[in-house]
Length: 202
Ligand SMILES: [Zn+2]
Image (cartoon, rainbow, N blue to C red):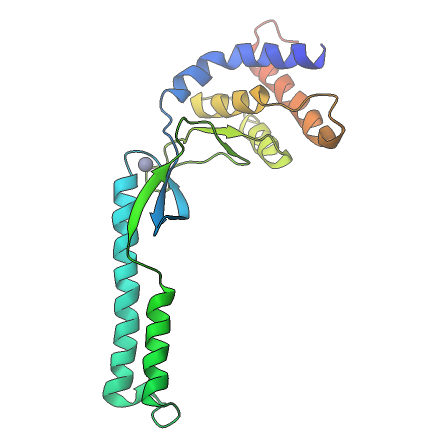
């Protein structure tokens, strides 16, 4: 089979898996701290909790810093070591201010990928509930290999089917010299899908 024919055939076989699973995906949501995204991807149901968690974590970090400096102020020691005399009161004050500022502002909010199709080089799931997030995958060697591993057992579920479909849907052009390795893996992936799903085989 020709390259494109192979991909189209595999996609056709995977279509129902893709349709079912894509109905369950969510836009990618991020927590922002003072308008900057902070690490972590979340679904629409969990983003509220993620913002709360981030706020709580910052509060805890702040309390740790305050407790540390309180210990210094009260005892002149830190972690059992005497530090009083080594630093001036002004030094200690400055260090406290610096450490608190370093934690960042407590202005948390959230943002998400308006319109879907967020481009990513790896599949994403919500960090809290593991729900699949709606992304447009950039088929790289790693994700193609993972997908092939997923199909090793010969069983395709909605998620593995959806992911294989997405990789084939966004496949690099066969003529693209910079993506030869990916093209080889794409052919393997499409072939494997057909082996598993096509009753008439190849
Ligand atoms: Zn979630």
